Amino acid sequence: MTTARTLVRPAAARSRRRPSRTRRTVKRNLTAYGFLCGALICFAFFSWYPIVREVLLSFQKTNFVGEARWVGFDNFRTVFADPGFTDAWVNTAEFTLLALVVGYVVPFAVAIVLNELKHARAYLRFVVYLPVMLPPAVAVLLFKWFYDPGPGLFNQILHAAHLPGLSWLDSTSTALISLVIVSTWMNLGSGTLIYLAALQSIPGELYEAAELDGAGLFRRIRHITIPQTRLILLVMLLLQIIATMQVFIEPYLLTGGGPEGSTVTVAYLMYQYAFNFTNFGGGGALGLMLMLVLMVFSAVYLRVSREEAR
Image (cartoon, rainbow, N blue to C red; front, top):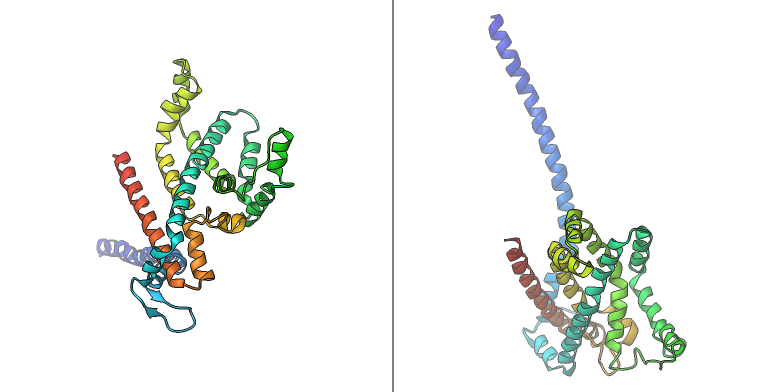
């Protein structure tokens, strides 16, 4: 009897402990799923619902007061017939290419310089990141004063160097590159810190071996830095393309699409259709086309990154 009781008691104890362990597991999982549901609700409400609503809006005619009317592809035909449609896509492509030449290379170069410095690195990182802390509207309006053809800072610098001033925002030859400069300055800090974090993860032994072999700075960048940061460079390239193709605040606040429509981008034309022409369906059609183009770039990136992983 004693042996039977000693066998039964541990079994009973284990059976009593098992529900408590199960309850803890269920409670822990419920907490995790609760946080996950909160994130999913936020994504659904602020990201997925607007996307679905825009797709539906592009096939409807509505003023958000009366009942929406299904018009099929009429909004797309209206947008395609607009003389400014092609110009907006050309301007967006030119802005993206210029931003890649300037805004994609400059943060990487600044990160390399900061990584090579031995002193005041933290202070310089703060200085580089400072423009990101400014609200975009404040930064754009600050550059609007810089570009002023009279007392503007840039023309004052040119006059001090005995060079003629420029009509930065009033000339079709300089307006677009002026917007690129503003965009690059506004986003320089975040890109630089991301590149700097990637550079600091490269093993120092690689650079030490290269220096022993007599490799200079540019050879180290070519044979060590770029190959070791190839994945982050591809990610930043995709993010740069997606961000620059949606440029809106710079032409809206600086040029209003001028001069002569040289800075009208797809996002700005979308805004005009929705709020100036009260054609929300046309704005939705433009937004859908822009989303499809960006999806193509994303698909190409995923294909390239998958091949890089192999």
